[in-house]
Structures are given as C-alpha cells and as structure tokens.
Amino acid sequence: MNLHEYQSKEILASYGVRIQRGFVANNVEEAVEAADKLKELTGSEGWVVKAQVHAGGRGKGGGVKFSPNYDKLKENAQNIIGMRLVTPQTSVEGKLVNSVLVAEDVYYPGETETKEFYVSILLDRALGKNTVVYSTEGGMDIEHVAEVTPHLIHKEVIDPTLGLQGFQARKIAFNLGLSGDSFKEFVKFIDSLYKAYVGIDASLFEINPVLKTSDNKIVAVDAKVTLDDNSLFRHKDLAALRDTREEDPMDVEAGEAGLNFVKLDGNVACMVNGAGLAMATMDIIKLSGGNPANFLDVGGTADAQRVQTAFGIILRDPNVKAILINIFGGIVRCDRVAQGVVDAYKAMGSLPVPLIVRLQGTNAVEAKQLIDDAGLPIHSAITLEEAANKVSEVLA
Image (cartoon, rainbow, N blue to C red):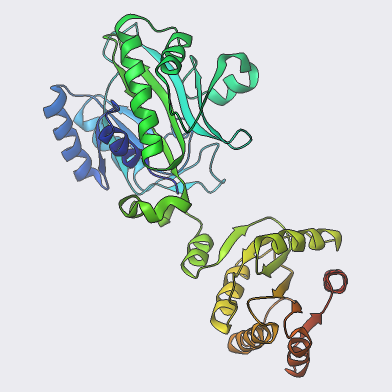
C-alpha cells in the first residue's frame, strides 16, 4: 500500500527523522492556512506547493512549485489542485490531484553549501535481507544516474536479525562524503530511518532528496513509503491511511470482494482458484495463441455472487475477447462452482464474449453435465489441452 508524501513524513517524524515540515491542503483556503502555520514556525515567507499523488517525477510534470509570497502560493495551489498530473510514472491520462502539501522552504536564500543525496531502504528478495541503497547524486534525475553512472549507486546489506549496525551507518555517511556535524547528523538520520522502516513493516522507503543544509542539518525533503499489505492487520492506524482514489477502481472493487486481481494487457481473461493454477492458466492462454488479460484468483469459494462480481470486473476491460474459467475442485466442489457460474450468467442475462469453463477435481463430471444441461452458450472442457483448443477456436 502506497502512502502520500505528507503521510510518509508524519510517520518518519514520529521516529525522530528530521523532515521538511508542511501541512496538507485540499483547497486554496486551506493552503493559505497551512502557509500561516509554517510562517509561525519558521518566521519567514516562502513555501513549496507539492501535488499529492502516488507517482514520482512530480516536479518534471509541474506538480511542485515554489511560492515566494502569498499571491504566488494561491496561484500555485489553484493551478495544481484539480489538475491531471502527467509524470514519467503515470499513464498518459495522468493522475487527478486532490490535495497538495504546503511545505517550508529548506533551501536557505543564498545558500551554496547544500548537498542532495539519495537514500532508500528495501528488501533484497534474493538475499532475504534489507538493503540501504544510496548515492551522492540525489534529486530528480536519480534514474539517469543509475543508468549512466551505476558506480555512484552504493548498497549496504543489513542482517535482519541484527539490524543496522553503527559501523554500517558510519560507512554510509563516509561514502556520502560527510564529515563533522553533518556526519553525526546523518548517522542519527539513517538509524532513525531504519527503525521507522522496520517499525511499520514497510517494503520500501525512498527519500529523494535527503538534504544537507549549510548549517549541517540532514533533512528528508521528500518521502515515498510503501507498506507491506500482509502486515496491515498489525497496523490498523496505517491501513486507515489508504487512499483508494489513487488506485485502479477495478483493483479496489476486487479487493473489497475478496478477489486477488491484477490487470494485464492481453485479450483472454481468466478466473481461477489458486495462484499456481493461475500461472499455469496464463501459460495455457499464451500457448493457445492468446494473451492473458488478467490474473484473477477467486480463492476457495466461487458462488454466484462472487463469480458475477468477477465477471463485472473482467468485462470492464474492452480488450477482453474471451473468458476462461479454470477451477480445480479440492476444497470447493466443482458442481457448486458450475452452479455459481450458471446462476451468475443467468443473472447477467448474457456475456458479450465467449466463456470457456474447465472444471477438474471433486464432482467434475457432475459439473460438466450441469453446465451442458443449462442451455447456455458456455464451452465446457475437462482437460487443459481441451480448454486451450477452445480458446483458440473462439479467438479464430
């Protein structure tokens, strides 16, 4: 689950990480109120207005603007809130900006001794260990740095049973070229950052840039946090931060219905029970001459309502030319699944694309008979090969 920048920074601050302070605003009036609060804290005017969307590259897309005075602040807030922000990490349609973060200006006027770094923490799945990835070249072009000058990207692997050790924190600060007070500040910064990462069961922290100010403070100017969905049962407060407006509506509906759904770019939709069978089904679709349009796991149950919901999600994709249901009846009986498919089909009246149903396992023979006797235009199959051949036929 992704968080907005303002949410991420609030979490980091609670663990002692120094952040660029700010307040979220949903309209121009709230943006002015946020600027007033920051002026009381800092004693000066000058704010940064940042679009709050789940995408990087906001600055390049015009979603981050400096506001030296109240008039410019109002103008920037008015222009950014409600815009469709297009960045290298969004679709061509962009993302609707519902709110902005009004943040303090941490780049002091006339400052020449600042330095921007890149720091992220993530799980290296091959090693089974957390890894700090960092670079002296922070800022908007970190992807270019990684591609053109990969030697400037450093990694520090952390044993999860020991956590971030002091010598590792000092090594990172040394490799970033820090010394004196800024060195000490960064050691505290990275230690607190790692504690936050572990404490909230995150799967990704990305701080870009981390700023060293001219007075040797280390500040998280931006923050991207991704939480491990599997850990949210332990963090009800963090689960409540989810912004479904930033997610694909099909993913949201599937999640609410208890369906595991991932949209793909193909033309044959599939509905299965079990991740392993789903992968095999997608292979079969590929071998049949089609391309999988989704990954959809209905889990251990497939009653009429669940199947009907799955049909509705699948058919929102205009690229879908056929649907393949592939169920192995172990815990769930095939005849019950077949009845659910028939009931869902009748409830919907009809389907605009061909439907192939392959049921194998407990009561598979009875299930095929039930579908064949329903009098509906459903293609039934017993083996995977037969299902693949029927997919080829309907796509021909």
